[in-house]
Amino acid sequence: MSIDYLALANAGVETLHPYQPGKPVEELERELGISHSVKLASNENPLGLSPKAKTAIERALPELARYPDANGFALKTALANKLGVDTQQLILGNGSNELIDLVFHTFVGAKQQVVFSQYTFIVYAMATQAHGAQAVVVPAKDLGHDLDAMAAAITEQTKLVCITNPNNPTGTFLSKAALAAFLAKVPEHVLVILDEAYTEYVTEEERHPSIDWLAQYPNLIVSRTFSKAYGLAGLRVGYMVAHPELIGVLNRVREPFNCNSLALAAAEAALGDEAYLSEAVALNSREMARYEAFFDSQNLRYVPSRGNFITLDLQRDAMPVYEALLREGVIVRPIAGYGLPHCLRISIGLEHENQRCIEALTKVLA
Ligand SMILES: *Cc1c(COP(=O)(O)O)cnc(C)c1O
Image (cartoon, rainbow, N blue to C red):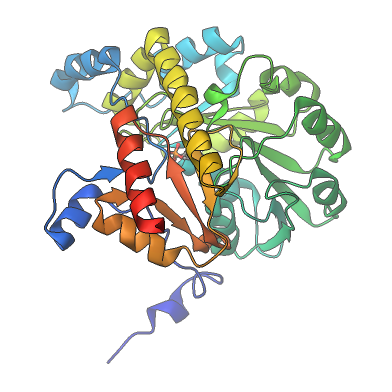
């Protein structure tokens, strides 16, 4: 007897492929028998844990036999103070990825349409498919979102629009004026996720005032994470900010203990560690400049990025270069799965890691 499990699964699952994460260092070293490799593949914070977060984790250890605070009171209070919102406008997740999925579970049904851009975060496409909904993929403009075309793609069947700013995997950036004009065009029954996973890397002057926009646009959902600039990718914690009633609806579907105690404690501490955040942002812009200067000197094409990564366009199949870099002990991210088979995305690392990557690239491309 054999069971066709795929046939048993929900519509959409049959053609779904598992998410392809960046290659873990341990896996590469096991496969090639090498050591001291560097991973610049998953946009993690190269500084490691903030010392304040580390202390908070150690303090939280004795309570691990107990369930976490299902309501995340302390972290929500800290976030509410920092953002100038009410705690009722906040929901915490096991990474913002969980919250994106939660928005789909809660609001997106079979046959409804979800609008997002070509070359954007792959999780929107995966969630759309897993829910049997219809993806309306709007062709990119200069490798970023074409907001006019996205607005024009909204129909009566559209339930959700997903926008990433700065965008992943290309690092492109939408101005506040462009975003504001877009939001003004979206009908109220259409929800908009504005995914700001990299917003901390954007300068104050350029950053769009999404939290202020919430008062004007009750269909707007701002999504942020502690995985990137706050350096807590391994703990999984993210949050969304939206209208309190929208958050209330999401809370009906949310798993009660979705954020673990260590993540809650560490995120609260990381939020208060301004020195760590500024160091991370300063390191990122310094090292971004190193890559740009190198690419310019070699006449290599790249997409100017506002994130903590930069996408190199090799104008030919990038896989052989990716594999040659692996043999040099440097893990970057091929993004063929995003429809960019000629590009590699490089996360900005520490100075010596970037130097290693640049040397390896020089050797491999020679
Ligand atoms: C990394 C990333 C996230 C964050 O995911 P977490 O689940 O919070 O770790 C969300 N959106 C985009 C666009 C990302 O690149």
